[in-house]
Image (cartoon, rainbow, N blue to C red; front, side, top):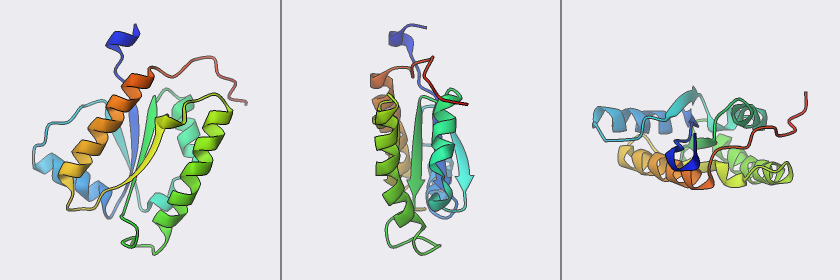
Length: 142
């Protein structure tokens, strides 16, 4: 496939309490969204380990989006704070191993923000489309 026909595969980790409910709202509101993303529902964005993101990129996803509760609204008190601290470190690691760190994004979507869910998903897919397909043959280790 050449880059002009490239449609990125996106993995989205959604917090059960906020962003997953926002995704549900977008769906029941019948908002038009791209179909090239898959959602993994996690109880808290703080449960998304950097290894999960690296594994997704290694296994063919072109981008990973982590959607969390807004700061101050985490059902687990500080899970989204933990995520907010991890993502910059993960992005540095990605740059270090030769992967564009823009392939990973953190954003905040509440249960009442179905339209924002659509906007964030669509914008991230457009951003990854501009970056292009993830390179094959990276030295991922064992």
